[in-house]
Amino acid sequence: MSELSCDPKWLPASPHRERVLAYLADGRAHVVERGHGVAPLLVFEDGGAMELPRARVAPTERGMELVAAEAPDAPDQTKHRDVCGTLDELKSRIAADPARAAAERDELCRLARDAQHMLGRLERRRKAYEALAVTLGELAEALAETTGPDPAPGSAAAEALVERLAAASEPSLRGDREALFALAESVRDLANAQERCLARYRDLAMQLGGLYEAVRGGRRWSPHAP
Image: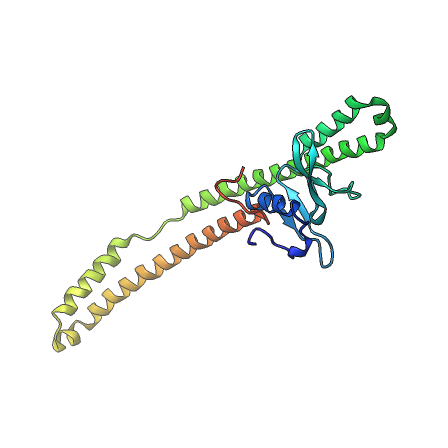
């Protein structure tokens, strides 16, 4: 199960397991470990989060959706996977039975706090992309400013070296040694300059890859992810 980054023991039973794995495979959620012996979180791209083993497919105002089996008692967990599902339940409770909703106002407040928490998570994610854009701009500028050496002198020296060596004799090698060595050093200079340039490009490309990995985190992204 390449989609799962934790011990499979934390997965809920079927049919909830299959829905969780589908969300992970589609890149719509990812698993966040919380330490040895502690149930990991199933974190949704839409802002919600619930303990992985508590994820359940259950009827909601929008049909069968993944929700937390029990009301979360932690500020970093929510009942629904997104703000819309949270507000749909809140509105449904009020519309169906205002008296009961008033008596259960703690539950209404919990749903409202869930929505508030998800908004905060979405905002933090947006800011991470904003920071990425700034750093990408700096990297793009650095890449554009990186220039390689003029290859003409070194390439000409390499060609001349080949021609001279092709017609070389022992006397010419003795007599033209300094000239041949000078051509060889011109070739070396070009190679060294190219290597330094490529190392600079490589370092910048590695920074780019690191930025991607950092913003992706534990998410499984694919071209078909929503």
